[in-house]
Length: 339
Length: 291
Image (cartoon, rainbow over all chains, first blue to last red; front, top):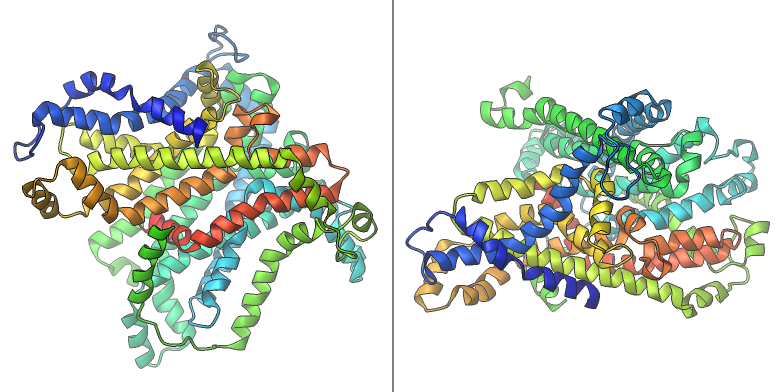
């Protein structure tokens, strides 16, 4: 509490200074407000939003804006950037096979995350949505991997999956010694290993979101279908899946963005040197390895800008082509979906 | 804690299904148990591995502890390194959570209940923050933190964490605060309660569920965070637990059993915290997605 508490409190003060600029932009408040008068209210607004605004602008907006600027320099990270190189960083990035690999890996991770997790998560959510004993404890346990830090699970998994680790030894013991693999360093297998770990870690999150979506489906629909004599799978196909659509699409969006930004698990298990060789590097690990760790801050920042642009394009395209269906359905009635 | 119990009880009572749950289909249990086994096996391996010796692990990497050996755990628990990192993580987590809740609530309150020009812009500004993941901003952020002299200090992790948690906080809290009826505010004003009194007596209690959700999300994220501390903290004395685990595992890479013990102990706080607040975390995630 002490260190952070003090810093947080200290930052609380400046807004009174901000109040001038802030207050200037503030229109006269509605007359029905009582107490303090218009300047009192302006001061209140400045005082209450000031600290949050200051920290947000200082640590989110400024760095993002700075990124757009620093990306044009060949900069080692000290002093003012002087070596203006224009678009050279970006050209290098787009021509570097290392970046192409990382981008490809991100693409594979995006697709496989959706393809592998969605069916598993939907089946598990349907399973756990049944009313049965021990329901809540089962839900909690499935969620455990999601809660534990990436570092912890990464460290554990890398020990288990080493070539002389527990998994290979276990395979020997049950007579499947022929299946043993170099799970982490064989380039033809490593991506599969990464996907298995990712699914293990994040499927619980998908299940929780889907369970929340299932709770939102009106019970009467099921009762009506049951009265009409619909079978379990008919009910799921006609009622659950369509109504779960928005939830699935939002989860898929979060999953895609998460997969594009993936860093922790790869960096912890494979590290910056092994990941490219094993075929598990991502744009984010490429950024750290070739940026800060190589002393080329300008270059690293340019990579971040490329990552941001790619994420933005994907996000906008997704909203335009996938999420718009939800709003369109809401506006134009359900005609389109029914066919 | 008391607040939590008092807020969760009504939810329990509100559930229509007070009657006994049916046992259900045995096949469902079988699948559920299988899934749980897959989810928990690696975690169990890490915890059990800490009870083994290195020779046990070398001879039989997938075996059971025989005999059980608590030496690894005792070593970690009696060393000051582990506790220092727990302390650092706690400071960062608590300060981040406090900052997120206090600053986020204040800003959300203004956005939700005041009327002024620039209100929409303010909300849009925070909401836009969701578009900027930490990963993208990390290198310039590192430079900002270095330039204001917060390298290697916990403050250098806390302030950016608060900043990056604010968008989600504002988006979760604003609807809660908007939902408080105007009448209550006017009644309070007529009764002579100042705005501050109104805030403490009405706003805080009525938005408590949102505040708790936001606080838990901030704490769990802070507790697990890796990339930001990796950039900001280079000095072992300021390491948080995730950095500590990684440093320990590369330093003692030959001493597998001890690494496993260290790793297990590092996940215990998260597990305890999670089991205490599980319902809120789950509810918070679900709510954040639905909202």
